[in-house]
Length: 294
Image: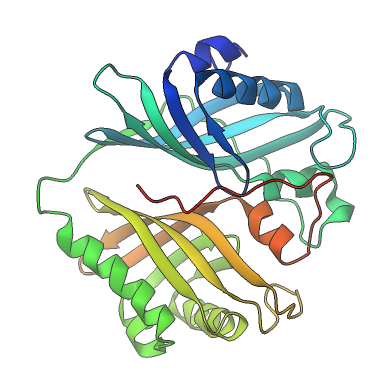
């Protein structure tokens, strides 16, 4: 694998000449040459980087890949020179391919918020997450048959609608009793905790809106890409209200059991919301990508 060989040119060769890489919370990368520079910066910032894939969904011209990255921080991205601190996080990429098998567009969700906590645990307000284990081989999932995913995708959309409408009953009614959730806004185990999570979320962001840009189905799984926006009006995760507006790019992977949501995982760049709420400051500003609409 070119990634684990730290061969930036070889990695970039898998992209088209005019490829676009949209990195959630960071600048957009345009073209193969820029992709090579971007990968070299990654290798320089995180020495000894290793990447493995957990799950891969094959969705026609689109591939969704859940990946795990480990390495050592040797750069200065977070305003302090790295001292080989071990870092690791789980991320997700959505890849559009051309007919020749090259990536023409990538939406990358790498959690630099987790990395910031691992690099400098005292500099952030949350405990650093544990180091994930790189899997030996990925699970591969095919796309759902034409039309088969529609009811599950509609269920997912209705869940976001319930949150926007602040309808607790509608929201909880779409979940299994043993539902689980993990994401940057907290973790949930069971419907009772889901109720507490819902109340805290809609109170913290009373004008919360979801703009869904893409949705796919694969077996019992729905993958939804969206932009989350709102205004931070009440405490959440120990952070007092800031009245700051947020606009966060994210992907949810939802497992459906029957006609209810049994498990949800959110992939986003935690650094995106942390910087918008003032919980973390980068040593240099970055330009966030535009809405990740395909």
